Figure 1 (tube, rainbow, N blue to C red):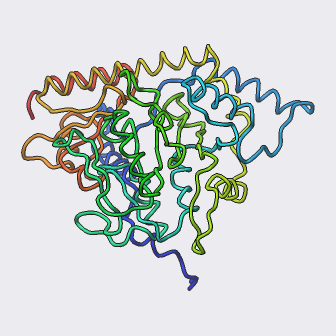
Figure 2: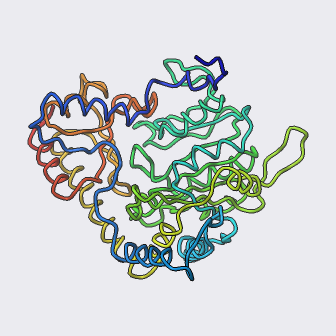
Figure 3: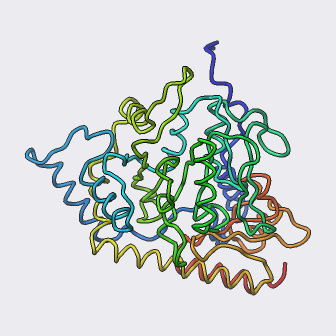
Length: 412
């Protein structure tokens, strides 16, 4: 037995991560009903194969590793320049946004970066999150000791910005001083978006109050509504106050390959205890070079192919398939008498529970009566109670079957 002290902030966390808990309950159901045809619309994992442009690029990269002339060992921790430049050109310059390749950091996924970015900020930082919220934002700050104690209204040192039906799921600006604001748009879990005007209010607030926005735009590729921002850097002044996180997981189906990136603009600064200023880009680079050896060369070559004409065309076709599924599910929910949000610019649907059900009860009803896996909204924060999240990431056939089951059941 060891008496070595541990980071006891971990003891404050709920027993298991939200999606692990859902998975365990579904596994118990499958054990009890092995013949049930369970359809998962819960965890946001993709089902379509990697597109040919990407797989062909990775095969060429495998051949590179098999030849002495082209073999690669350790790569640059920040990512290979071929991919960083492709991102700068393809995701930013093409939309009139000035982001340099030296401001882009390749990683093994946005989830890792969103958790790890906590390392470069003081434990004393006050954090604001939208509510409901992707659990990683909150849990990583609990681990870092910033969250305080868990109450019936959430963590008492975290500022919650409720996103409710009454406000069209648009968060209000913080009413008390904060240092970090997490925003995710298109939103996970509600599937809603922010207009450019509303996002500008957050940027202006951050500039006035000298705080940092941590902007998760992992689902920007699913936006179809004209005028909806795909990057926070479309907003004037955002380079002064925002770090942006993106992922190839949902855009290009890399959930099993792992690749994403973070943009930390030069000129973005934070303050030391002695009052001196440090470049956040430079200390993030220092953190990465110490704790990360870089994403795989083979995977980065695959990600580079996302930006070729063939890659873009093939990936857009896959995204269109997922969004057709989202529209099908939304129509089925409406037919069943369920009030439903999202599903237009994101592959997520936020479904209001029928009268008399909380989110856990409705989750179990969908599982036990329809053999459909959802995610209880309560797992996303206090304002998530009363809803479940559905995803459109299953196969075309499974999504269509789920829609038929939902539509046929009528008002629950």
